[in-house]
Amino acid sequence: MSDLRTLELAYLPPLDPSSDFEAVCRGLAEDGISCIVLQEVCGTLSLAEPGVEKEIARVLRETGLRAIACHGLEHAPYVLRQPDPDARRRMVAAHIDVMRRAADLGATTYVLHLGDYPKEGGERDVIWEPVTRAVDELAPAAEAAGIKLALENSLRLTYLARTVDELAGFVGQYDHPAVGVCFDVAHAHIHDGVQVALDALRPYVVTMHLHDNDGRHDQHFIPGRGTLDWAAFVPQIASCPRLLHLETEAIKPPLGGTLAQTEQHPPGEVHARYLGILNAPGSGLRVPA
Image: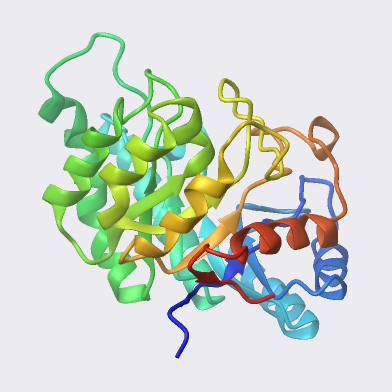
């Protein structure tokens, strides 16, 4: 009997606002990719637009792709820390709308960004209070939709949480089955260090963002193009008890940017590189194509 842990890998499609979502998905399917990550910008389609799920569902059905993960709305109005009640109300409503749409399309995790610390500082409980209020509304909606909220770890000191212990403390204290963590290994490589970050967040990780960088900048490189020690990290993935799946996050344009600002590699080759690293001897994983 194999003691390998089976986890699916969701591929982040290379998309910007000018991309043809259907054409990109057909290409991914032809390359042997079976699972993808949904995001707000599905090329010329927007996951935030009512009714768009019908077109996305058609593309998924015809290509045979499955959308098992979703990155939530990323722009500033949609970070969780919104002290203004009206802004928070709009943010929560927008996330619930997109989250339900993603869940209907098959996603089981929904990644959220926390936001920045206030410039004036303050007590930690006061700083986190708007996040708590937002999660108070998002968590029951996520549970009802059958999806997990995944709060992403930081890559800079101005961003919540300043340390992974702070994020672990929030999620652990909140203690809701629909609230977990997205472990971004490349962010950890820049900020806390991969081992320190994983040790703190391990009990709460429901999905992972896998990409590489030089240890200083968020470059969204494919594995091996940066300085992250994949051989040391990968064997620890299987020890995350709540982990549902893995996500590629290489070849991602900067927020509001285009694919021309990224390193381009053929998706089939990128996918094969991920599978080779994740299924290497001693990884403890079985990640199917």
